[in-house]
Length: 337
Ligand code: NAD
Ligand code: UD1
Image (cartoon, rainbow, N blue to C red; front, side, top):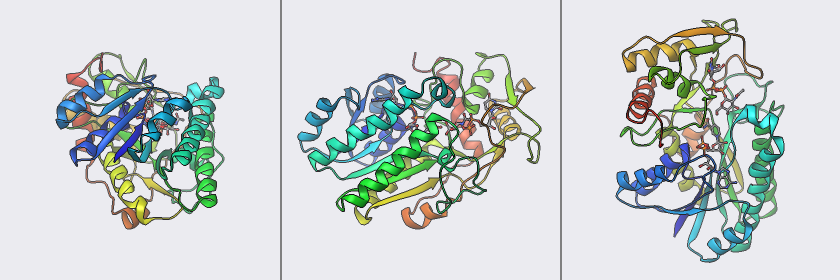
């Protein structure tokens, strides 16, 4: 029996597929390649010595899913597929609800039809919204999201909760990621954003490799130790391992559960820059800019629930996140292209 990984050619998906193959699981990837390249999975195959099956297709293509699930070969689904750019989601909300919410509905309906009842979903710390206090804990209220992207994650969490309540055979885990960074230590796979990066670490890495002139720091007047934003950065391999732990926990669980996946501590933007300078051995040009709309001052995870119930915790620190990001960026200055 295989694990179906939707969005498995993307950043977090490709690292998770590698971790699944490395421990001997069979994997089928469904990805429309809208934000990924098949090259990521060719490299995963080289690293693992096993080729995941890639089906180039869309989660909204009901017939495609029906045919795939009807083979009876799929036992569980890890669902990464979706759009993830916060700024773009405010300009193109319908595309975000269409891919992230409608796409998930098609997937859930076809899973139910085929009797596939185990799902892991990629959620985000953004579901806690602007009103939550830190550290974020799963018992806190969710909602008050500030972008269609965040709202799409919130809606899917609600759908999963309701679906599990209505059907006792269906079990689902939502993993609320904090800020994924880093790359596989081989430097062969990593994050490959199209265009100018929105997120901090890919931006810093592209400055270091000479693709961008300087990092703009979005505000240095927050109520934080050095005035810059504080986030909970988590190594993508720790995140990938969290999916394996969640997959193993699914058969022991009933209904719907949500877990934070974070390191449980925060670093500021300037701490991240300094740590990257250590890794790449050069100083990086930085300019202070205005705050970015929608940004919060500081948040990090209480990740103790995943520790207790999934037996999961991070094992990689800041220096490793930076060294692995830099190796990937240096070896692949233009990503997979
Ligand atoms: P990514 O864009 O690298 O991966 C998403 C993959 O899904 C891509 O390969 C893309 O081609 C594919 N895809 C998109 N729409 C699809 C569709 N309709 N049908 C089939 N495939 C489709 O992003 P990522 O960083 O690997 O994120 C994976 C998941 O984790 C996403 O759901 C994202 O919202 C969520 N997440 C990411 C972060 C982060 O910082 N990277 C944080 C929180 C949550
Ligand atoms: C962003 C999204 C969030 C999403 C997460 C992971 C927004 C408002 N939020 O979170 O919903 O789940 O990415 O994909 O977009 N920074 C700079 N300069 C830069 C880039 C970032 O100073 O060029 C700062 C930001 O202000 C923030 C920190 O770096 O303080 C991290 O930013 P980023 O990597 O974009 O992640 P989040 O804002 O936490």
